[in-house]
Length: 120
Image (tube, rainbow, N blue to C red; front, side):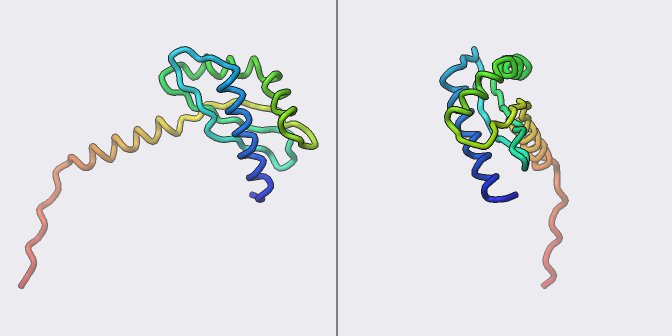
């Protein structure tokens, strides 16, 4: 990936995060924009959303229904040839990470074979 595309991804992530934080209220949920992936032609952007303590479906539905207003606000803040069409996706990496940590804890609790004594 090019440095320019990396900078655009980070800039889009920061601006969308700011918009979601200021303009949307999610009851009993912590909503975070975890990543943005813009296509090479800058036509589409996948926005990955993490939700803690809430319902992912409701959050994604709310963001998708307000996609045009979010997109227009991003367009006002970021000057690009064309504003990418936003597609909101659920990011489950946090849940997967917790699952892996739990599995590692279980493996750590399993009995191990005694170490063989050193031959002297």
